[in-house]
Length: 212
Ligand code: BEZ
Image (tube, rainbow, N blue to C red; front, side, top):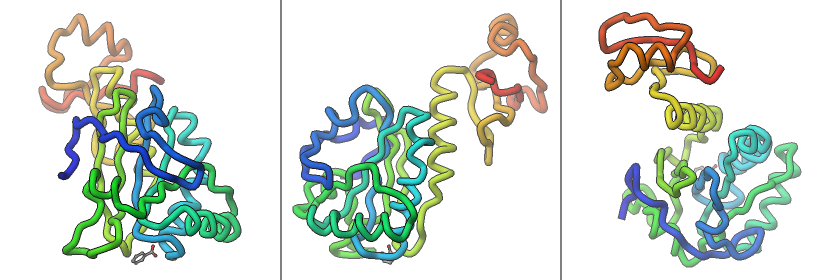
């Protein structure tokens, strides 16, 4: 079954490059990113996992744990990690789930038979501290993901969860944000956004990012 926004991320227990993982327990009370890739020892995946490892500090700053997945066994992951560390100038510092029996792939709908019968697609889920799925994204096998975009979405989710704002197209941390249309009370707006706002239209009100 496919996973929709707002669903609780399915829990599972599975082997990984760092040992047995009980997913919800592993997530703890923080944010998580679960991402699948088609296979070990493939070029695009090698760059993606290296990039994710190099972004360790950025994920940590946001309180996000990262975990990868493919249908290869643990021994294969461990041999491949040596290659990633060697070629991508990093140390893989997160677990890679070894989903050889496809248990997690089935739970998360990661095999799309019309794309490929056996390989997992390039999907990614952002999961919040309540274990709710907040973003799903699926890329074709031939296109590596933009992990700066994943960090940008996490910034947006963490901001919009705590302030009555939404973030415009191409927004990045520090840019103006929009006041949610449901907030109409001017006294509350003044209190929440002391730097004021400009109304381009009654429904399009821009204000400096409130947590800055
Ligand atoms: C890759 O990760 O390089 C890749 C995987 C499957 C198909 C094409 C490319």
